[in-house]
Image (tube, rainbow over all chains, first blue to last red; front, side, top):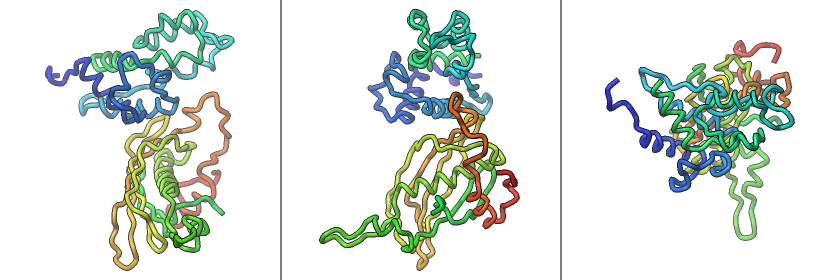
Length: 138
Length: 174
């Protein structure tokens, strides 16, 4: 692949910002790398599907499709598994699973609280950029 | 009243695009309230924009359903864009063209063009764009109690597919 085809982190951030502006109807200055998708940008679960579709379209190339599997970017089916969630809190096994499945998200603060309702709030714009960067480089 | 806001499918390319039409008639009750005469203002029967969105949702929804043999429960999840530039009046025909942009296990995205015509000229005029996001209810609504039978594609769909000569596309058990 020629060097010109490799996107820098800044370029990925710009494209991601454009996607979020359209999907969530926001202005550019409302979106920072630290913004939480749900807590700050008010994304709802159905917006995640919209964002995934737009990411796939934007970052796919003729040579390499950019395909995001269910649960790869956003948490999925957590509540169904008692091994991972008990009484609304992530278990140790649940935390290990989250960190392994979603290495693009910083869960260090969340580890103290572990409220399953707050998992999605840990996903920031920077998480998306890290996810895309790793996936494009893989 | 049955909640059908398209009259006929005139083209269906499964997995790609669908075109449907709707004839707007003064016999439709709601047009007399939208808008009724008010004081010095004369009545102005105009087809509601919300029903233009519903018509596109039905067109695009059938397109999305057909792509998976009507096995998925296709639910309108989000109106990504809806821009309508002109009114549609009784006597005119609406044309909905929906194109499938994206389809996967969780759902689908469509892009749509709305046009109108008049019998006198027969010319189509683009009047708006409606882009929609659909969810496959069984795949993406975990934790929600979704009924087992396919409540989306029922008798109304059969009627409309039959009139388009497409009755074979949907099985007898739905």
